[in-house]
Length: 319
Image (cartoon, rainbow, N blue to C red; front, side, top):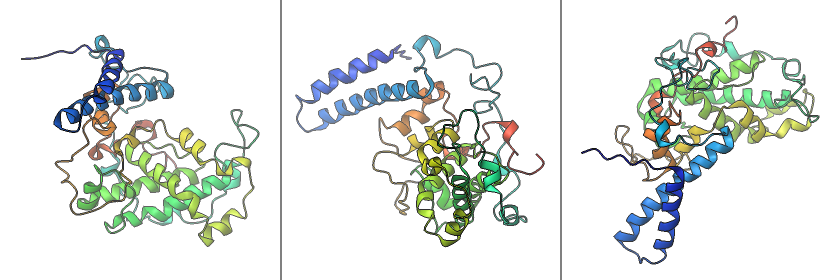
């Protein structure tokens, strides 16, 4: 038997509000736990919609819109040629290896003219300087190159949501592909391009880089480099750079409450049977509703599928 619930956003909001009041009348026990799970799920749907509206200006699709056909240009309605929701996008994991390949680390060695490449201001920059300053570009490049090679070894885990940690522990090819994400970000920068992550793995790698970059200035090699570069007021605007460089922060929804990204215990769930918290944003984003919103490639097995085929090799000279 098939049941169809044509619930609108306001219905989720009304349910969570009513159940919130009901929780106050229930004592500890299974009944209260069941009510709490439903209330928390409905509240998460409302919060997710509010976040989506703030970032894109659109709401979750209404029930009548769920079965609408996909955009004919296979860009998920983005109108920009993106293959983020298209069929058979190119896969970085099966492309030519960077980290550990014959050209590593020659492809990122040598000096780079950060001041020339990132010292100019565009029309949309404010009087504080370019949004990506020479010093910021140099920091990001330094951390990306430093950390790319580390992740060939399972003993040096990066910051990852729990759903991805078993992949890192059990698959060498996955570890190498994740390391390549850092390398491609570095290679774009040294070509004078913004980081512009082009797959989910690169998005998370970039978030990790920005998380570590403020502390990287304790490294003497980087200090010496930065001293030679011009200064701008925007040199420390990490959050602004992060928001401009990535299209969205959907990958961060994979971090559940209390997950710091660094627990690699052998007791964690098997890669084939991940356990996500009921009503969590991770469960929501990976489920059918996330797909209807155009959220794709969030599962770690899809992290290296390119969003845009046109940018697939833009990190390589001559491409």
